[in-house]
Length: 137
Image (cartoon, rainbow, N blue to C red):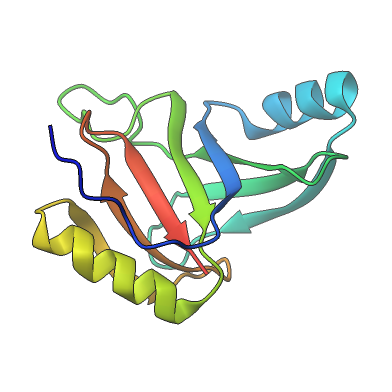
């Protein structure tokens, strides 16, 4: 087992994303049962057919509900209904770049740091089990 520890940085979960076949149905569930504030529907120009909506919970936590026509299509295993990723905020674009570079060196980088269409500066990595983790500023 590796015993080296990561440099001390402040990390908080920025949001958790969920693939769903029906964003409005899921948003209504979170709003009705948990008091979520439902944000506007986002349509990606980079990935036609991808839509998402952010929900803010009273304690400050956010959920991203996502839908796309290719999710759970036969032979397409990268994206499926259910939890998609955990996003953690590390406080700055510089920290995102540094952490992404370190994880790239370990072969875990999926997507290099970039500004997304929905306003996040992020990189995407996989944890040891293959789960996606977004690192945001």
